[in-house]
Amino acid sequence: MPTAALLLYPEALATSVTLPAEILHAAAQMSQTSRGRGISAEIQLLGTQQDTAITLDSGLRLALDGDLADLASCDLLILPAIWRHPRRVLQQAQGWLPKIRALHEQGASVCSVGTASTLLAETGLLDGRPATTHWHDFDRFEQTYPPVHLKRRHLITQSDRLYCVGSVNSIGDFMVHFVEQWYGERIARTVEAQFSPEARQSYETAAFLQESTGAHHDAVIRDTQDHMQLHPADTHSINSLAALSGLSARSFGRRFRKATGETPMRYLLNLRIREAKALLQHSDLALADIAWRCGFQSPSRFSQAFRSATALSPRAFREAVRGKRFVATNNLLPEVTGADQA
Image (cartoon, rainbow, N blue to C red; front, side, top):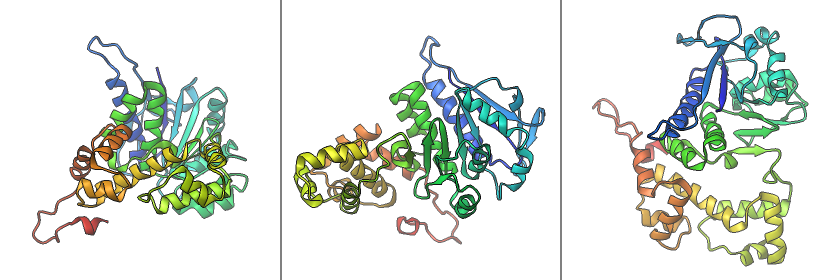
């Protein structure tokens, strides 16, 4: 049974608390069979002052299940995003920061959201490791914690059970990843589809994984990746990409897989699926046109590949996205169009 603890302080953003809790709770519910068998989850909201409830700066009041000091262990500890500058939280945190370090040393995964990465940096756990934070705090964070390797281009970083996510949206990506580890891919994909499929991307795409060869320094392969990203609809093959890189097909395939953890054709397919998601979300193009623009030879092949990657048909994905759009009904407001939203 996965156990998750979410630490609360008055400056915490409630959405970075409720979203991960609801995703994990949904996964636990989906795992239940008609006979009541499944994998339950224990989710605790914890404070730091032995209080029974906490009022956030937003005015929302939440009941607490206990105190961080009394937590013996957990599988996952989440440090919610901090509203505005983290200075005030840091001043109050010096007494309980060692507990975060102790829980990690006992085997807990720790995930900070947004500027809460400052709390992880203060523990010293991020020294010599990759990290990210809210984009608005990049410069201050880098100047304050020079031993930490700030990754400005990544929304998620992972290193030795330490995770940083740059925004509230990214905590959803991380939680889908966490759910997959405990409940399997089928439930993870179902949860992903329920919680704003248009906002999700694969964890591997969003994350800088220190233990993964996907974060590589092979400039030749990086240039080829950039070319594919700029021209996903072109007709690519191992031979054409190898020629572009100046390598033999065999050497290119071996180096590409070593650098990225994927074959060139699998990497290209994932690029095309991401492009298709964007077009389904932001355009009114027919499915056949999207298939062509993303490099698929036919609408049927596009639908088959999209369903295999997302567990949704392109049409179902578009309907889920469009169902979440706002439609202006007040005559005093201008009509919202797809072009206006792009």
